[in-house]
Length: 521
Ligand code: MSP
Image 1: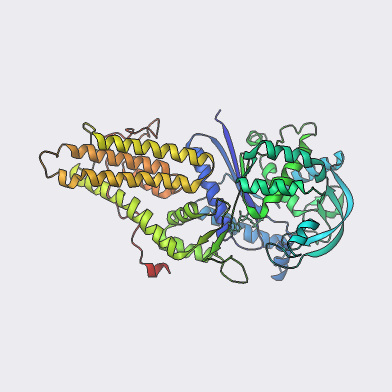
Image 2: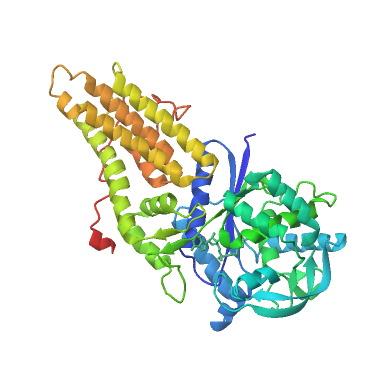
């Protein structure tokens, strides 16, 4: 059986509709999932919605709806949006589904039995928007304001069930210090280590006064399981079936920096607590957590108050002007995967579309296939003897294939995408050097034309192969134009020379049509 690979995105709150941030994380996960599938791995890719938050119930009541009505409405929009944007998730979990709720109650019940969850009282600084307590020291650092919404933290006292997070301090610290790949990028891991060293308090695991919205605490329905604990369990509940259990532990949880603490500290601690229970030995800690940064918009943080969110309407506009793969290209190549935020700027989007997609890739496709029609009867020609320029092109292809693999091993989708496009650039240079349009008219060089065109077609096949996880529709179109639709794909798709001669090629329209800058703005 092939090696399995399990990748997740956060599950998104359904108080509102999706925006670029949700689409971004999900698109990065999609590119990684497609890449691993292409390599033959048994992939499971999960996304979904987090529904038991107070802000969901509040948004519902503002509209005179029940929480579940509003959750149903928005969950459907998340689901259909991801479908429309070509996301290849294997399942979509909603935390209001019975399959999830039953598992969460079961696991929390087990933790009650071991004493990892106990009834106690808590007083602390509470960030209402984020539904989380902020440790005293950190609240002071933040000047008692939410780092996300900027609103004042509230002093709050609750009788609650607690999770004994403090008991896992040294185990967590050892995990992170000995196995640096567990939390990436490094700066994020160091941040977490620093905060664990400040000391871990037990954390509330339940709440009261939610108006009945939330999963009931086993044996004490007055209390509802705290939305964050409920939500984290989605990663496990979805694969806790006989067919799927082999996917656990997750290969990577992809998130953004806003929810690092829950994923890097509370989640592994919950799993460590569960794993000690007989029968739960399979519940290991996920292999890796990758926390990216944020998209900002034209230099400013996106927020409701500023009204500058790149929302669904805006995304739709972009797709209808430039196409879905152009949006994926911008998100994947320019996105905030590192510790720095990334700026979404319309001008830059346009310029990159023009330079990278239209001029580099689109132009290569068009030149190659037009010349193929003109000088090779519209078929992949039989190559003759290869010379130095061909050897250089083959070397460029090998370099690109290796670079994509190396970058994707570390989830560096932007750099992988650059490496794939670098092969397109190398092929353009090769064409410029070989000048088949002139060679065809020169009796001394005429014989090189089939060789040149074969090498261009084959390099194009490799470019499409490398681009497939990132620009799936573009890659499929290139394959189709190369006559590969029904044809058998080469056994080793990255070996140069796998494209059979004789396949019928097709010119087609411009892959990335010209867009006027004004139209874009
Ligand atoms: N429901 C919780 C997560 C529970 S996971 C067990 C939640 N939901 S959320 O709807 O607020 O989504 C947060 C996630 O959306 C971020 O971690 C990130 O993946 C994505 N993004 C939201 N805004 C973003 C940007 N401005 N930029 C990039 N990604 C962003 O938190």
